Amino acid sequence: MEAELVYIALAALFGIFMAWGIGANDVANAMATSVGSKALTIKQAILVAAIFEFLGAVLAGGEVTSTIRKGIVDADLLSGSPELLVYGMLASLLSAGTWLFIASKNGWPVSTTHSIVGAIVGFAAAGIGVDAVQWGKVATIVMSWIASPLTAGFIAYLIYQSVQRLILRQDDPLAMAKRYVPVYMFFAAFTITLVTILKGLKHVGLKIDLAESYMLATAIAVAIAIIGSIAIRRIQPDPKAEKSQHFYTVERVFGVLMVITACGMAFAHGSNDVANAIGPLAAVVSIAQTGQIAAKSALPIWVLALGGGGIVIGLATYGRHVIATVGKKITQLTPSRGFAAELAAATTIVIASGTGMPISTTHTLVGAVLGVGLARGIEAIDLRVVARIFVSWVVTIPAGAFLSIVFFFIFKTVLP
Amino acid sequence: MANMLANIFGSSPVRPLEKHIGIAFRCAKQLHGFFAAAIKGNWEKAATVRGEIERLEHEADDLKKKIRLGLPKSLFMPVPREDLLELLLVQDKIANRTKDVSGIVMGRKMQIPPEIADQFLEFVDRNVDAAKQARKSVRELDELFTAGFRGAEVALVEELIEELDRIETDTDDKQAALRAELFKIEESMNPIDAVFMYQVIELTGEIADMAERVGRRLELLLSH
Image 1 (cartoon, helix red, strand yellow):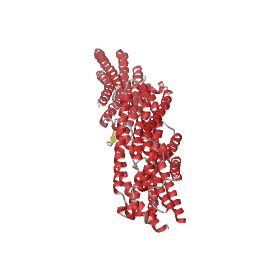
Image 2 (cartoon, chains in turn blue, purple):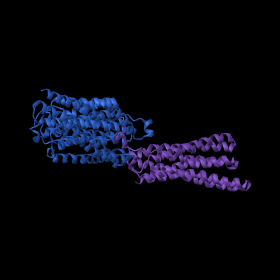
Image 3 (spheres, helix red, strand yellow):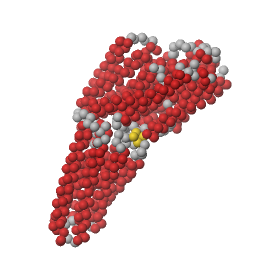
Image 4 (spheres, one colour):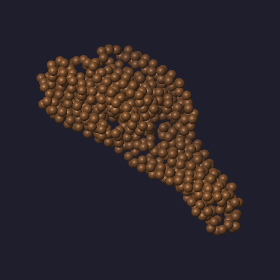
C-alpha cells in the first residue's frame, strides 16, 4: 500500500510540474493573441483561461487523455508487470516537464504535446520493447502534427479572405463589420459547441442524440451571437482616432469578437493540452488504485482539478510575463487578424480533441497565423523564425524520449 | 526570454515608413522659413533653419538605415520587399534635395533677385505641398495592408496620388514661369549667380519630382 501512495504522490507532483509548465508557456501563447490586440487585459485573459481551460479539459478532454493514457503503449504486453507502466508514466511526466523547463529558460520553441508523446514512446520502446509501442497510432499522431497547422492555416486563410471581402474592402467597413461580426460569432460558438457535444460529452456521461446536438449547438451559438451584437451596438465611432487609422472603430468591433474566440481558444487548449499532464497521471493513479492496468476506469475528478489548477497557477505566476512580452510584440495581429487566427486554430484543435489526437496548440496557432499572412493580412512574417520552430518541432521528440529513458531506468532501480 | 510566437512577426516596415515620410516632409517644410530669411538677407535666421534641415535630414537617414536593417530577405510580406525599399529611397530623397538646395544657398549666401522673390517663395511652397501630399498618401499604407491592397481603400489612395500628380504638374508650370522671369533679368545679374539661381530652381523643383515618384512607387504597390 505504501508503494502505491508513493506512486500517486510522485505522479501528482510531476503532473503539477508539467501542468505548471503548460500554463506558463502554452496557455500564455494562446492567450497572448487576445492581449496583444487589446481585446482583453492580462487579468481578464487569466480569468478567461482559468474558466475555459477547465471547461475544455472536463467537457472535451476525454478522448485525448485516453490516447495519452493508453493509446500509445500497448497495455496488454504489460498486464504481468503493471509497475513498469507506472515508472514509465512517471518518467514521461518528469522528462517532458524538465525538457519544457529547460526549453523555456533558453527560449526554445517547443511543444508540450510533442515532448510528452516523445517521452512515452521513448520509455516504451527502450524500456519495455519496441513492440510495446502502438506504432500505427503513433504514426497517426505524427500525421496529425503535420495536418493540424496546415488545416488551421487553410481555415485562417479562408476566414481572413472573407473578412477582407465582406468588411475591410467595402466603402463603409464599420457598417459591414457590425452586420457580419455577429455571424462570425455564431460560427465560432457553433463549431466549438457542436464538436464538444458530439465528441466530448460522452466522457462526462451525457448522451445526446444527433438532432438534439445540432439544436443545442445552434441555440448556444445564437445566444452568444445576440450577446455579442448587443456589445457591438454600444461601440461608437471615435472620429479623432479614426483620422489616423480608418479601421480604428472596425477593429474595436472585432475586439468584441476576439473575446469570444479567446474563450474558444482557451477551451480548445484545455480540451487538448491538459491531457498532456493528466493523461500519464491518470494512468498511474488507476494502476496504483486497482493494482492492474484497467482498460476502462473513470477519470477521478481530482486528477482533472489538479491539471486545471496547475495550469492556472502556471499562467498566473510565470505565464503573465510571457503574455505581456508576446502581447507587446505581436501588435501586427490586430483583432480582425487575430480573431481569424484564433478561430481557425480553436476549431482545428477542438476537432483534433474530438478525435483523440494530441496536437500542439502553439504550432496550430502558428499555422493559422501563416494562413492569415498568405491572405496578405500580415505586414511581415519572419520565415527564419518559422523554420526554427519546425526544427525545434523535430528536436523535441528525441529530446523527450532520451530524458524519459534515463528517468525510466532510474525509477526502475530506485522505486519499490 | 525569447518567444517564438512573438518572433514570427518580423519588424513591420509599415509604421516606420509612415514615420519616415513625416520626417522628410517636416524637413522640406523648413524651406519656406529658410528662403524667407534668405530673401530678407537675415543669414543668422537662415543658418538656424538650415541647422534644423540638416538635423531632420540626418533623422530621416538614420530611420532609413534602421528600416533597411529590419527588412531581411527572410521576411514574408504581402508586397515585394524591393518595392518598399524603393519607396523608402525616394522618400529619403525629398529630405536630401532639401538639404542640397539649402546648402548651396547658404554656402554662397545667395541673393534671390527681388524681382522674382515672391514668385520663387510661391514655387517653394508648392513643392512643400507636394511633399505634404506624398505624406498623406504614404500614411494610408497601414490601411492598405489591412485591406490587402484591394477595394475602397485602394480607390482612396488612387485619388490621393492623382491630387499629388496635379500638385506636381502645378510645380512644373510654376518652374517654367519662374525660369522665364529669371531669363528676363539674367543680363542684369552676376553670371555666376544667375547660373546658380537656375540650379536652385532646378533642385527645388526636384522635391516635387521626388514626391511624385513616391506616388508612383505607391501605385506600384497597389498593382500587386
